[in-house]
Amino acid sequence: MAKTFFTSDTHFNHFNIIKYCARPFASTEEMNREMILRWNAVVTPDDIVYHLGDFAMGKASEWPKFLQQLNGARKIIILGSHDRRARQMLEGGFTEAHEKLEWDGWLLQHKPIKTQQKLLCGHIHEKWIRLGRAINVGVDVWDFTPRTIEELTQAVQSPPHYKCPHCGAMLIHLENNISHRNGKCVSAGAINH
Image (cartoon, rainbow, N blue to C red; front, side, top):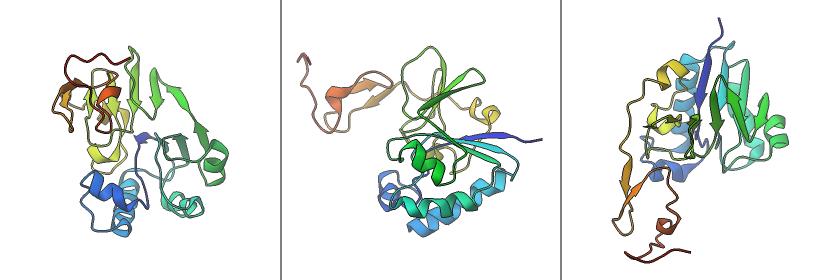
């Protein structure tokens, strides 16, 4: 019987992601090869895979070679920050392409949001695994391997707070922390309009 898997943020061909997320690979070739091996170790040719965005970087003409090597009868992409338009993703080999999607009571979308709905997302790489009803399906927290919903729902809760890397302020995940992005921190007591 076919299984359903979820993953995101593979970033095939993206050298800098190795450094940004401390991925344990020496090169993009090694990273690409290992992620294909790990994908195919769990996904059969009959399975369904929902990829929640940021599939690959670089030339879109090179992306189909990755999809062709990955098992799965249906590969559905939820468009991420670095993906091409839906038409291009379909031409590259994905079965379906969506901005967001409902699946069995779960909202599937690339970026995490604060919601009362059960959410599967990516985008945040290694920052957290689970916050309440939101689960990060990104490869950086799942050993570079797609996972089933049964596996994902076993994820341990992550701390709700994190420290701004620029000013040290304690912030809450899934809150609007725009004043602490890219080193543009608002000083204590300042009002951000």
